[in-house]
Structures are given as C-alpha cells and as structure tokens.
Length: 143
Figure 1: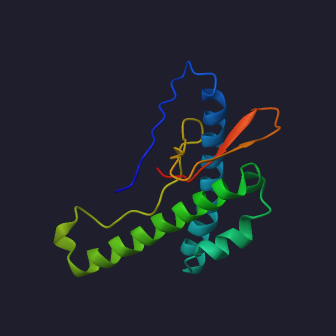
Figure 2 (figure 1 turned 45 degrees about the vertical axis):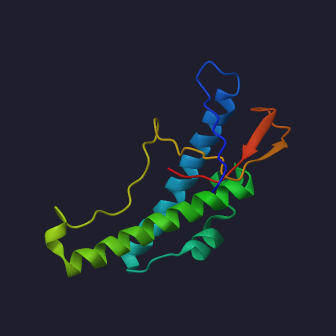
C-alpha cells in the first residue's frame, strides 16, 4: 500500500501563480524537447531517446528555467510518450482491426493554454530565491 497526499490548489490560493508558472515552463520544455524528437524522427527516421534529448537540450533556456529534477521528469515523460507511440504502432501492425486508424505522433501542448500538471509523488520542497516565487516545489511531472 502506498500513502498518497493530495493538495488541491485553487486559483484563489496565493501559491497558484507560482505553480501555474512552473507548469507553463514545464510545457515549454516539453514542446522544445518534442520538437527535437519529432524533427529527428520525420527527417532522419531516428528516434531520440531520453539520453540523446537530454544532451541536446540541457543548455536550452527551457531546461534551465526549471529545477533539474522537474526538467528531467518532463524529459522522462516525453520519452515514455514516444515509447507508447511506438508500442501502439507495433500493435497496429499486428492487429489493425483493434484501432480506428493509425496511431498519431505525439503532439505539442498548446502554446498559450498548455500546461503539464505537476504531480507531487516525490515532493521535495526547497527555498528558492526567485523573483517569481518564494517557494518552488520540485516534483515528478505527469500529464
């Protein structure tokens, strides 16, 4: 059995702005990393795994805008999404009757409204002296 602690943060909560900002920054990293993976797949036919995407994006401003634990969690999430896409393609090849059509490539999150929801499975609260927040939660990221 796993103990789970859930915190519901409403828009009226003073912490909402900092969490929304972190979720928006996570979306920016997701889209930047997905761009690299998608372009490599479409133009070169190569799948960029987690390690390769990490090495290509680690100096990007979207990666550095978040705590490293959160940035790495976003990259792991993207890697998981791409692996799910390839598994769906393989299943489609074996049994196309189980699908309404060919699986679609992973898409980008919306530029303005898109967010990647942060799920605090391994929450690590630490003080962060930033202009945008007094406390930033470094946590695992899921959609």
